[in-house]
Image (cartoon, rainbow, N blue to C red; front, side, top):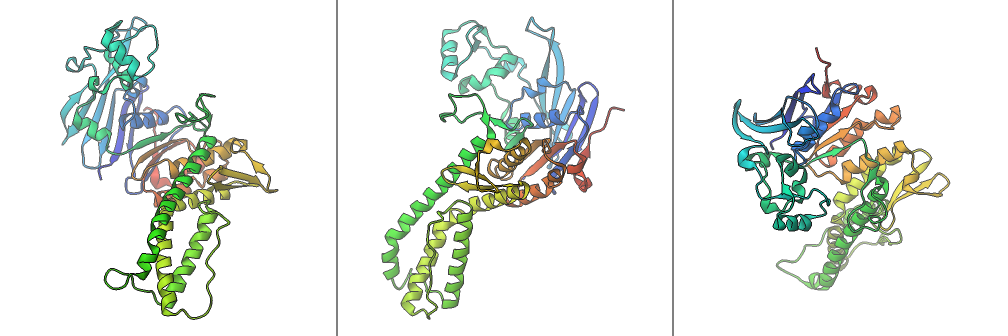
Length: 439
């Protein structure tokens, strides 16, 4: 799989030149530097290129950015200054993208190219844009004025797809190589989901509440899937049990049966502890008497069916166990569990309930970060984390990388951390890329 292997930027903020080699085999790279060296800018430019907004290449001052890939190809972004169309500023930053192969530029694209100018779209100068339908209405009426390239770039998410002017397919393919997500420093508040009850009440709500609702929905969805499988298997159980000969199952020997039944009991206990099964469900109690042939046949089919019914929980169970294990090791005087209806269930050492947003800033940062890593990041993504140490005690900072390695073992991903914490980076010199001051 083609991956990002290095990132280079010249002239960042006018004087920084940085070269960052990613630890693709180790899957974790730590960018370490004092404040003001451009760590956040680098993460945002990477996120902007891979599926985000290219506007980021106008936000920061630089001369050249290069994203280098494991197959030797590269994409170069050049920034230039030009006379602005906006009377409020004399100059504006523009950029072009160049695809490199074997050290040669084979393709160039810029939203400011004459070929790429938008000639039939218009921007309202008074009323704000509301949605796609509103913009399409304005386009049909040909109101106000044409979109400049900068305006087009800013509003293209509202422009009907047939009118958009995206980069060439070769560049778009590279931009969509993998999912890239940035976990920013402002991560304790989140926008409510569209259509949710909270959407009309506030622009932002605590992220811990949003994620509590998400995990509740994920548990309910898994339970529904298991229930659908259970219904199908239970309906056909008698016929399958009575079927003999070709296509029927072979009864397990008694030692195998007892082992499999014991394993299912252990799995049920894990599922209950994770909030995926009701604690009221009874376990099968087996007689110590020897199984006859008919009993072995019935129990064999029961074992096979139960494994299928519970299999749907496997991925979610592994994530929940990792999540609860990490969080409950960190939290003192309180415990986190999960419930299909309530989501996050927090209690103190007296057993009294707590609300998720009653947690301290550091506890919320820990919970949000671990949740993002386990539940919101797809496998083989590129994940960018800005200052994972925010609000964390030094002891917790030392656990960031071990926790991250555990999570990567469950959901393989590539991670770039930007930090100025010596505690987080200590003992991991092989993963560190230190940004240098100008000569």
